Image (cartoon, rainbow, N blue to C red):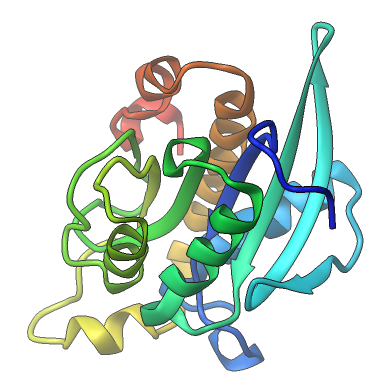
Length: 205
């Protein structure tokens, strides 16, 4: 581990549930975005720390270098805040220095929405992170997974896999979410919002 300090860089938190049976579920798109970033950046297995899996990368653009840490909490979704709080405390970092990536039932499949703050909107994982941080100023990137059909329980829906037609859409959306994260590393969040808070039809997905 690096020494503690206020220049620890930026943190990308992907929310999901550990274990193979959850890998392709709607609730795990946050983990999948981290998988894309790890592939793009050539990162290995990562380390176990803060009740999660952690990867570190130094990203450079135009002469500027940012140290970035990816965290996939292994606490199960509803206790995600525990891992986040441990990481922030260790690096003496503020919640504003991180971006939480998560699924969203209220957004249509293929939509992205990034915001610097706000309520958890009924998402138990984000709610736990907000509570652990003691502030709603927690930047987040929501990935639309669509609403449950009919009378299906939302809890069952988020733990279900994507349908055949949905799989292609969500795959492209996850890649796009990774693009948004890479932009956020170097740009003000307002610019990322301007580029990615658009309707599905505008993105070509």
